Length: 237
Image 1 (spheres, rainbow, N blue to C red):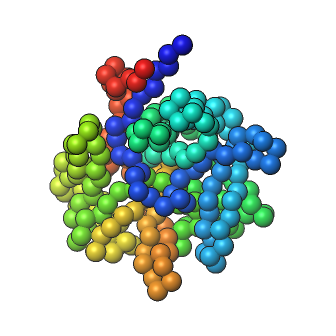
Image 2 (image 1 turned 120 degrees about the vertical axis):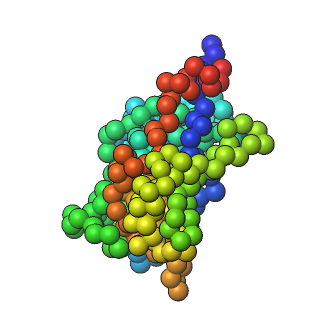
């Protein structure tokens, strides 16, 4: 029996570090759960997991099994709650929207993509980001003048999407400048998670620290990928 899967054609998180994604893995009981690689501020690496999202796990594993022959592996959730699943054919597939919050309990701490610290206090722009690094990457242009991402609509073709083309130069400049206040005018990569929180790596003498930038306003952002339209033309059977 054939299956139909929808290839995702929006911003995909290619070439990001291992801790920039969620993953499906087996727990000690042999059950598939959602896991995370978490780098703590004191340089420990934690491996928390949660078994609270069985329906999402099943959807992702269905895609993984079809294209890779085995379940488990990375997935991402973008700022529009769309679930993106990388497959063995180097493409990403759409696993629907998921709006239930994913968080992890580890050694008495709650690890969440919400903008709060381990004591439940609201983060302010410029604070150390203690949440997961799972998110979708964007590029702040040098000088804080625009925001971009790239994607490949088909083989041997790359498109650079500019926020200024989507919302106008004035609005894009305003958004970019707000991020540049925290990220710096040299620009570079920052991330947006499913909670619409923005965080960015900042280089230090010890490597990269992650800093909370602020909350994204989707009214001043790239449009939501229209998966209803994609369904008509980009199904993989």
